[in-house]
Amino acid sequence: MTQRALVLVDLQNDFCAGGALAVAQADETIGVANHLIEEFRRRGDAIVATLDWHPANHGSFASVQQQPPYTTGELDGLPQTWWPDHCIQHSSGAQLHPLLNQQNIDERFYKGENPAIDSYSAFYDNDHRQKTRLDDWLRERQIDQLVIMGLATDYCVKFSVLDALALGYRVDVVTDGCRGVNLRAQDSLAAFQDMAAAGATLYTLNNWLEMQDQTLA
Ligand SMILES: [Zn+2]
Image 1 (tube, protein in one colour):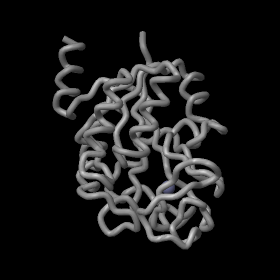
Image 2 (cartoon, rainbow, N blue to C red):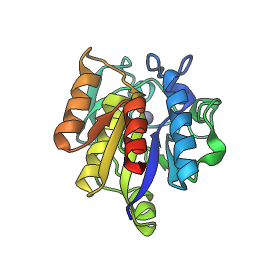
Image 3 (cartoon, rainbow, N blue to C red):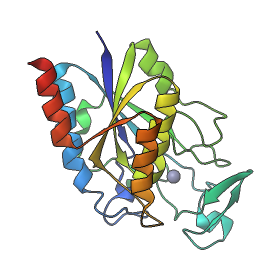
């Protein structure tokens, strides 16, 4: 019997409407998340959330680098986009979206705490120097199948999915539960193509729910 988990990526205020790094239509993902949470809870499957969780002096911040936001440079030897200050630890912008059904989240995983390097993936920092607790937590529970959605498609969702596949998980991505930054117009589309090419299966919420019903029938 395969064990599975829902992984909700960075459904935080700063990535939603009115936030410091607002992603277009991000709030529309919250209803999709709540639907999946209900489904996973009903079946007794695990539900986890990741949170971008930066110190105020984080090296990815344009303000820290004194560069214009959304331009690019290099952080500790890696290519880096300079972001507006976002998801500062304990700030209201770093909190999960108020309409997200948070009481059913089993565990939260924090990333981006080291000011010297950015951490898009739920599993590692951007240079794979350090691992978060997520992989160990999943393995302790014999979870080998993940359903991933969240913000943003072209950064934290994409790298979480690619790392999960490399770590040997089976990964479904719920595409309408994701929205992208799209610094270039095609970035989200390209990100979904990269995830699929690496072995992820892409679903809309409705397709995914139908597939569950067929599996049960
Ligand atoms: Zn960040």
